[in-house]
Length: 484
Image 1 (cartoon, one colour):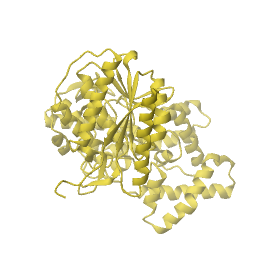
Image 2 (tube, helix red, strand yellow):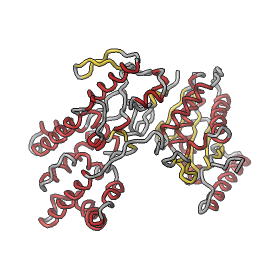
Image 3 (cartoon, helix red, strand yellow):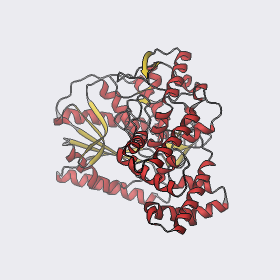
Image 4 (tube, helix red, strand yellow):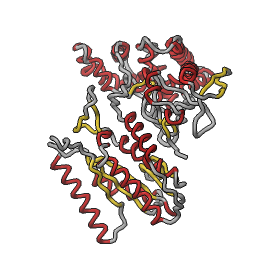
C-alpha cells in the first residue's frame, strides 16, 4: 500500500471536481506546506455558508486569550488556561503544515506558549491589548511559525471545517462514516492509512504563508504608504527588535516609543489585503507536483520482488533514481521544478525550493516501494540531522538519498553532510543527486566549476577506493523546443 496518496485518488473523485467545490486536493500521509490564513477568513466574502460564524469565533477566542493573559500574572490556574489555549494539538485529518513523515501535526509546545504569554503580558502593561497580538507574535517568538498560526485557526474553527466537509461529501456523493467531534456527529470520509476522519481544506482560506509571518511581508505592506515605509525601516524594526525582550527595564520614554511602534505595526497588519493560494500559478510548486505523482502512479507497472541483500537494495534504489532522472530529463517534467507567471509560463531562471524535487522523488519512490514491501521515509532524523530519504527493508540494507539543487553548495554538502548522514543512519550505501537548474549568467561560471569539482572529487574517491556517496546528476534545465 502506498504511504502517500492524493485526496482525489483516495476518494475516486476528479481533482477538477474537488477544485470546483473549493476543496484542496491534499496529499494524504504527508504534510504539504500550505497554511490556513486568519486574514483570509476575514477578507473572503463568498465562502461556503459553513463559515458564517467563523470570524466571530476567532475574534472571541483571541480576545478571551488576551483577557486571560492580562489576569494571569498572579494566578497559576489562569496561567494554565492561557497555556492550554495556545499549546493546542493540531486536529486530525488536514494534511497541511510542516510535518514531513506524518500528517497528524505537532502541537505548539508549552515552552513556546509560555514565551508568547510573557511577551503579550508585557505589551498589555504598555496598554496594547489588541487580539492581533497573538498573530503578530510569529515575528518575535522562535518556533512559533506559520504552521502554529494555522494550527490555532484550525483548532478554533474545526467544527466549521467539518461542516464544510460534510456538505461537500454529500454534494459529490463521497462515501462517509460517522465521527463524533466535540460531542457532535459529522459524516466525514475516512483516512486511508489511519482510523480517523479526513477534513477538507477550503482553497480560499489557503496561503503559501500567512500574512505577517516574517518582517518582509510586513515591510511590503508598509511600502504602499511612503511615511509608513520610512517609519518601519527607520523606527519600528530597530525599536521593536531591541526593546521587546526587555520591556520591564525600559524607561517611560522608551516604553512610549515601543507602544507607538506596536500600534503602527498593528495598523499596517490590519490593512494588509491577503491573497489566497492559486493552484494554477502554484507559487510553491506542490500542487502541480502532486498531480504529476498521481499520473505517474496510474502508469506504473508493478515489479514485485523480495529484496534482502544490500546490493539488491542499492540496485533497487538506483532504478528509482533513474526513473526520477528520466521523468525530469526525457519526459518533459523539468517544468515542475520552476515557478510560473500569471499566464502559466515557466520562469526558467527561477527554480522552486529543494522541497519540490524532493516531493517528486518521494512520490516516485513511494509508488515503487509500495509494490516491493520496501520501507522508505522522508527526512528521518538521527544524531547528525535529517537526511532527505532512507530506503530499505532492514538495518542491514538501508540506503540513504540526498537531493540538492546545483545552485546550493553542492561540494560542501557532498564532502561533509551526506557522509555523516550515511554514518548516522548506519546505511550500506548513499546516493547524492544533484539537479542542475541554472546555467545562465551570472551563474554559469560558478555552476560549471561546482559540477566539475564535484564530478572530479567523486571519480577521485572512487579510483582510490574511498567510501563516499555515489553522485548522479539530473539535468533539470528548460530548453527551447526543437522548432526554435
